[in-house]
Amino acid sequence: MNERIRELVEQADEYAEQTVHYYQGQFDGLTWEGKIKQTRDKKFAELIVRECMACSTWVGKVNNYAIEPVHTAHTINQRMKEHFGVEE
Image (cartoon, one colour):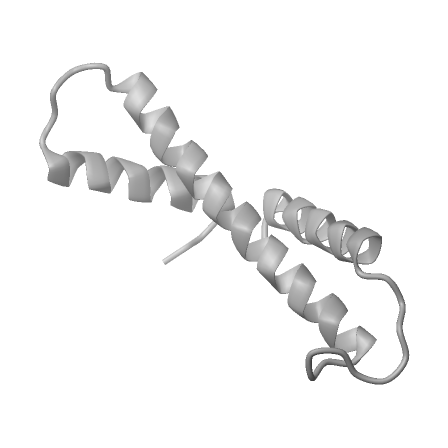
């Protein structure tokens, strides 16, 4: 896991802690701990999607000329791999 993913995890944790108020028992079928985890996971997914959108926007700004869609997809995939530190 690279540093950016750790930062996103921390942001999602902080968001969940700040937005889910403590309660006893269950609410909507979830304990407080379960609601914290659900909120954190949803926020983390949202942050990942936003990062991916930023990667694809970055590619569009760099490539201000008409290129083949396959090339664009490859470039975006490469950019996301580099951004998140994913190795094949």
